[in-house]
Length: 230
Image (cartoon, rainbow, N blue to C red; front, top):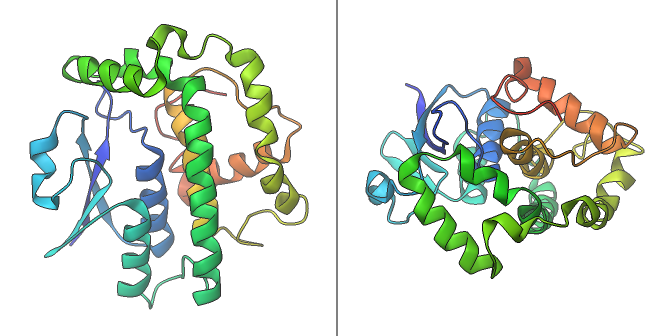
């Protein structure tokens, strides 16, 4: 039986853009577990009330309900230990937790660069909620949040230097093959690609090539997703 994943969607049900849901989808693909994604929108709080919280990802595996992408990754690793490891040992799990937190910071720094592009892709019922919550968070209107993004992206690219330090010697953060550390960071880039035509990376950046390898992974699962060619 396929696992069920509640997955953030825009007005188009196929536009799935949560960086955290992308982490989970890649974890499921890595484990080779069949899963079904269920489109969920910001104001569908009642739909996932059974999970006792109000955001996605939410994974349903039979009688088990798990929310939060990091908790889901740990659940999959421990429950399906006979399948390819996401962390490659307890030491790897600890290091990956650090990278997962670092990737959370990247998401936060990226948000001002792309948040204004998200609004137009949302279902009508989500727009008021999204505007109110994001304008409260950023302290300004959506239309002005990213007004200086052509300059601000330069500072954001500098945050990627630790990633470049690894990719200069290895094709993935996981070494020769990807691991959950890669998926945690990749979710950030896939979020941007799904919602915004704004170019984050230059083509001579090793991060660009790494992102391309992950877009092609698992029969181009991420590459086939609705998004922008940037």
